[in-house]
Amino acid sequence: MSGLEDVVACETSICRIAVEEDRGVLEYRGYDIHELAKNSSYEEVAFLLLFGDLPSKSEFESFKEELAMKRELPPQIIGLLTHLPPFTHPMVVLRTAISYLGSMDKHIQYKSHERSIEKSISLIAKFPTIVAYFHRIRTGQNLIHPREDLSHAENFLYMLHGEEPTETMAKSLDLDFILHAEHELNASTFAARIAASTLADMYACIVAATGTLLGPLHGGASQKVMEMLREVAVPWRAESYVREKLENGERIMGFGHRVYRKVMDPRTIELKILAKKLADEKNPKWYQISEAIEEAVYKYKGLLPNVDFYSASVYANLGIPDDLFVNIFAIGRISGWCAHVIEQYENNRLIRPRAEYVGSQQRRYVPLSDRE
Ligand code: CMC
Image (cartoon, rainbow, N blue to C red; front, top):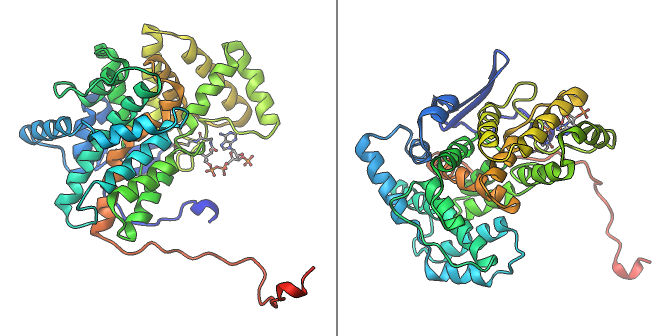
């Protein structure tokens, strides 16, 4: 019961996660994550999550076109990004910008399925632009405006770095977005659904989710993993580092999972392969340290890496700054959040659980004048 472990809080047809025959299972709308990772694209997965089925060729083309057209930000949002202190965490920036986008939407309240889809597509399209623009503003670089001819992942890397990414880089980030797009009732998605159950507007639901994702026990773990990789610095130090941390009762970031527990998170399987591929082509250092840490954590605590662990070395090799790691997670997850908000709106009952009261009862009020 603590932490709502194993409590089923709602029905969903968006995502299934399970442990079956000692194997972690993850399916988006019934499609296995490994099959999607191999064959799909982030845009297609976003369509699948929002609409429930894979798109036809023409549906896919018009969905991609609509996403690409909605990438640019209103000037007010760019103004906001220039006014926020440059030391603001980019996830704080993201949630502030989402809230501001809500203030500019005259039809903010939930009205219909069509309106919710429209808002979702706009948010999915704008997330990468908010992140890339803020990063360029805080580092004193000119803004690189989105291009409609590039894919979601390609365009993000182009806006961030100011040059078109190689095919390997774009494909790697696309795969990462697919793997992060959805994960049932994780903390941030639950936060979004709780907000949606009050019929709060879409932006409020996504702000709730974005704020929740930043916590280090959730998406914030990937940035902490990178801090650890930098601290360990060389593979041979991994074992003593891990032993010492565990002896001090500290948690190793990027390890453990509430649902998968003793089986490998299926996303980790894909991310480890991706991290190795990028390590072979770019810098092998982060992958080598990661592997040594993985071995040591398993040896001393029997824990397996989760989605945030190998993401860190993938992002480092894509040239993404450490404090944007959680934002990359959010850019992928926004499609899953929106799908859940819509599902909640359309089969809604207020989420209002109970708490077991364990505090004092029936205390006698003593007036302030009679207290010491
Ligand atoms: N390092 C060291 N020990 C751990 C860790 C860890 N990362 N994770 C779990 N444990 C231990 C914990 O101390 C406990 O040990 P014992 O039984 O000896 O007291 C046992 O494993 C069970 O832990 P728990 O706290 O009951 O597990 P939980 O289901 O409540 O927590 C978790 C899940 C993900 C919050 C936790 O594993 C953790 O804190 N991991 C590190 C942060 C992290 O990587 N978060 C990303 C989560 S996955 C993706 C996402 O959602 O973003």
